[in-house]
Image (cartoon, rainbow, N blue to C red; front, top):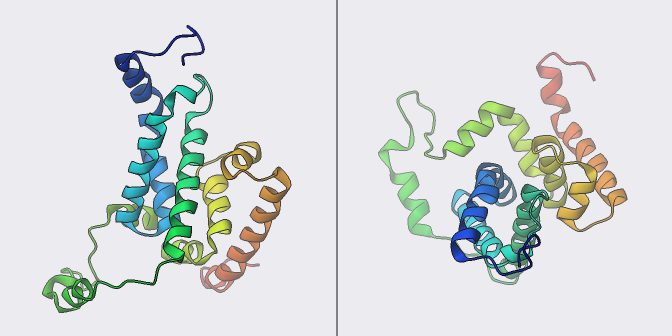
Length: 197
């Protein structure tokens, strides 16, 4: 229901509002999904599921509120539900994919470095560096999530509390512990780069 008119939006109105308010968040939403899943296909699936849910429940979205925070919360909840589902299933390995990768002659590009078609990985590595990306990815998902939301996406503590559905004190605590863990993981790297502790 539209808050302004008190009536149901027409499909055309709903589609226009959905496109104008929620589609501009696609790139940050994908980045968040990729950082949570660490897999391009899983991130794409998660973003698609998020937009499907957002469209289905768009009548509940309050126009003028933070669309990005609303979508991030839907994505986070979808990720948790999918994570729970997968954790109850035995691990699966596609051996033909692994074998195909290692038997491929073009695993290494002209530079002698393993090539990747994952543009997101390359852009994130350029942005924060291999060591930092690896250390971030090695954090437990709760810690990784607060670092992404705060330090990469710029959400406030209040917004993070709503997205994660936890008290602000818990947000601060997790962020503090996550930053300390990241600091420990990167201490040797930082010294090698000439930074003093």
